[in-house]
Amino acid sequence: MSAKPLRSFFGSLLVLVMPLVLPAFVFVAVLATEAPFLRPSPPHEPRRAYCTWACHNVGCSHRTRLPAVLTADTGLYGTTIHGLFRIGRGLSSDRRTGYGAANLLVLCAGWPAAMYGLVVVALRQRIRIVALRKRGR
Image (cartoon, rainbow, N blue to C red):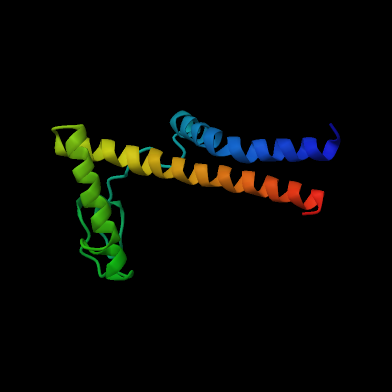
């Protein structure tokens, strides 16, 4: 095997493995060092003139800056939250526990897994295109 295909193989392997390995290293680093720029839990902040974690945890009374189709209860955000609560009902009898579990399953596992799958598909297609070009097709 020559150097170029070997480099290409390890480059592809790096692209495929990094999304799986890097979050684990960041997670362990945050737990070990309590890094201030990567918060291990939502901070307890007072309400301010601008949005903070308090808005996320308690609710936001600020004027929205994004269109209602994204931020309203009937928009993308609200539909997502209501959907997570519906999924959570099937996971736990406790409303908050079910929502948390659904949030982890959908937004922390399902969505990244779907994006990772798309990267794998795109990488395979790229490899196939390069191989076809080399053959002169």
